[in-house]
Image (cartoon, rainbow, N blue to C red; front, side, top):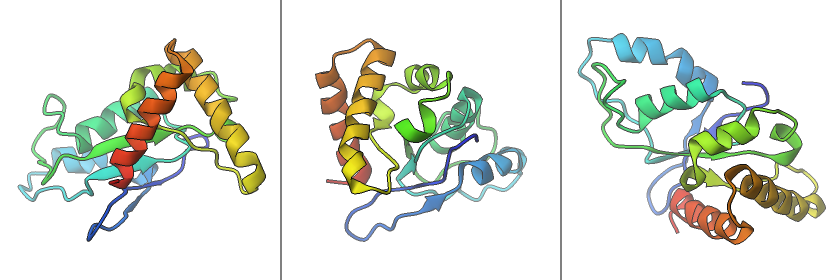
Length: 159
């Protein structure tokens, strides 16, 4: 993608975090969906795409591959259903005109707030900018964004 990075699946207890490169996942999509293997696809229960810079088509492919969307999946079955979460960092993604459309397409129930700042003094400003951007893109109150993304983070990280 253009600025998108890999992600990590959150976990608690004995679960481990898995780094997943979105480009690699998509590169292997064709092979996975056309294979005659009956081996289950082993994925973590949750995957997070940090500073997501992909296109809506990539989101659809990831959903089909990871989330049990049987309409577009062919012979590969997932051993478990994976929940995908997406984050958009103001310093990375907000320059792109497609970000608001992606946020609307993905929906608030799979968004988490992030900043991607190395300087800890800039993090809170980015989080507030993220709330403003998401609220405007979705046409909802900022409180809805805060409450929902907090609940999403709790689901992502298992707390």
